[in-house]
Length: 318
Image 1 (cartoon, rainbow, N blue to C red):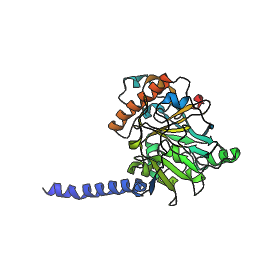
Image 2: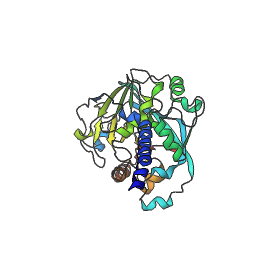
Image 3: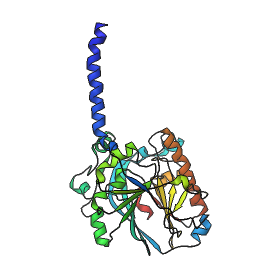
Image 4: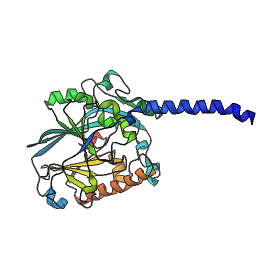
């Protein structure tokens, strides 16, 4: 009994120390985001045949703001029988930003990639301490060439977006936020800003940041995809629910003269899409949802081969 009591105090101190360290690393998760509902226009279309038969005056330009160097297979479903075919060779994964221009609604972005901190302070740029630790443990590094950052590329394009639609809240998709103006509105799925998500991206947003969220629970499913929202009400720009990799992951369809489906991290790269290997989620339930979302995207690609696919982190597809 004396020995147990003697061991109890050091064990308690160790538990408290570990708990304090975890709370410090995850402190961004305790920050609250003041989020308003995204105003969803009335649905004017009921199926994808009708949508794609009516292309709109909207364009898309995709550019790279850096790379994440890692074993890409770590992002995939760990229990997929096809995981054995993934080579597990570390490679550069493109950190992408998509500039959308609408003839009426102007310029917007899908994701923000990296700001210039990744060139100035490699290999982790403006990542939170939690994400620095996670990257270090998993052997992940990040790299950026001078002038490749979001701000420099927007300046060259003379683009001044007032709104950003995120595929999801991971720091390789939100790291460019500090380069944007204080009046920029940030839009994501209603369930996306979880504690862990906030812990991962808290560094990127200021106290004045404006947030709105898309509620897919109220959106109609449009087969073969899941719930889909016509963001401008004219069939030009669609948010599609693809949960799994994160709680409220979003894919986007840009319905211009050459329609494009952006899978986001519902499929990181072409090999995984073609072989039906879904993304890894926060937990096993998320990974299971990711399998369903991927199969819906694959069914859409088969049904509409004229729609170009751009994957979450692959430059060779645009």
